[in-house]
Picture 1: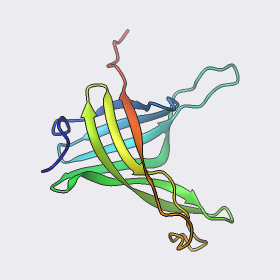
Picture 2: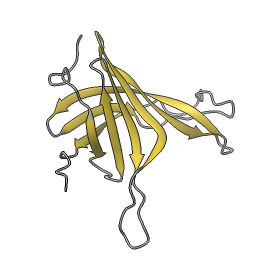
Picture 3: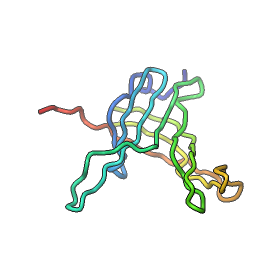
Amino acid sequence: MRVPAGCESSQAGEYHHADNPAFRYHGEDDGGTLSLTVLRARTTEDGGTEPPESSASSIVLQRTPEGFVGETRATGFTGSGAPCPVTFPTELVACEDAGLTLRAVASTSIDEGCQPSRSGPPPVRLKQVLLRDPPDAGP
């Protein structure tokens, strides 16, 4: 296996996005595959937050000879607003005590048949940082 240093061990746990803490992630790791379920906290009218709810988005990464690679699975929308399943290539590039660093395509264009659009700019992979939440101290 060729994975970044520190990524050999379990990366299971709770995370939040460094740039938008409303996006939370629940990670499960069986030693070969890391699955991150994307959760999103809702802001209440008084400025607080409600508990995160599960979304249809997930990140599934496998430890392989080519790296810690996989895809982000989400729902995209056509120009007319029809929902379509979409996937984005995703790679885990760093595992540290503070969290995970991913490189993923952030957006894509799809046509009315839910297929990748042949026009438009080429996909660009962007760095995404997920910070590990501290363990729950309990009551």
